[in-house]
Image (cartoon, rainbow, N blue to C red; front, side, top):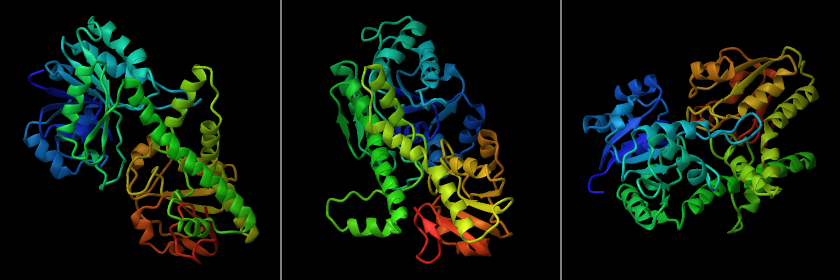
Length: 421
C-alpha cells in the first residue's frame, strides 16, 4: 500500500479524536450518518468536547474533512470503524451499529483495502460477524481481496491528560503482513507506542477484559461500602488507611455507568455463555454495580426519615447527571437509577448539571435538566457526579435548615455530608 488514505466511520467520542490525530499525517476523511454532527464539526466545534476547537479548526484548515456522503470515502483504502457497541434492555450485545457500519464500508470497499475495527466487542466478532457483511456487500473475498484488523479504543471521555496519542495502542491484523502495516500506521501517530497482538481475537479479548477487571474491582468496594455502612464505619477512611500498603489497589465505590465499564462485561459474559460457560464473578460484579443507584436512593430516604423529614412531595436536588465528572457524556449514566428509584416516593426532583445537554437528556431520558444553579432550597441533596464546579461550591447553600446531604463520590469535606458511599 503505497499511499494510505484513511476513513474513520463514526465521529463520536472515539472516532473524532482518532480521525483528527491521523489527519496530522495522512489524508483523512471522517464519516458519520448524523448530518447535524458533521455540520457542527465542519464549523469547527465538537459538542463532546473531546477535541478542542483550535485543534479541530487547524485540522480542517489542513484538509481534514467530515462528511455524511459515502462517495467522499470511496477512494480511501484504510477504513477504521469506531461506532458504539451498546447492550439492549436485556443486557445482550447490540451489534446493529457494527453491522450498519460494515455495510457502509462494504459499499465502497476495493481490492487491497484494509478495514480496522475499534469498537468494543467480544472475541470473534470481527471475523465471524463483521467480515461476512463486508464480503456480502462488497462481493470481495476476505484475506484475498481485502484485509482486516482490530485495534481497540482506549478513549477516556473527559480526560485531557490521557489523550488518544498518549495511550498505548493494541493492534492486530488478519495476516502477518496486514498486522505489520496496521501496527506501523498506528505507531506513526501514537506517541505512547503500540503493542502488536498475535491475533485479532487476542486483541478483542484484551479490550473486553480491561473494563471487566475495573468493573469487578469497583463492585468489590461497592460491596465493602454496604458492609461498612452496616458497621457504622466510614468507607473512605477505611480505603485511605488500607491504601498505605504499597500494593493496595485504589478503587473507590460509586456508580458504574458510561459506554465502557458498564457495558463491556456483558459482552464477555454473553460470549462465555454461548460457549457453554456461565461466568460467576463477572455477572456478580455487574449485579452489584447495577444495584447501586437504587441503594443510594434508599439510603437517602432512610436518612430523611431518621431526621423526621416529610418524604412525600419533598424536594430533592440531584447534582450531576453525566456518567462521569467534567464530561458531557450521558450515555448509560447510572444517575438515572437513583432518579427512577426516588420516583416511587412521589418526590419533586430537580436535576442540575452544568455539563450535560438538556435537550439530549430530555430526548434520551425524558427528564428536565438545568445548567443553572437552582435558587430554591431542598430537603435533600445528592452529589452524584464530581464535577469541578461542585467541588468549588458549598453544597449546603442548596439545603434547608433540616435536610440531608448524601455524597455519592466521597469528595465533600468531613462534616458536610450526612452520609457517603
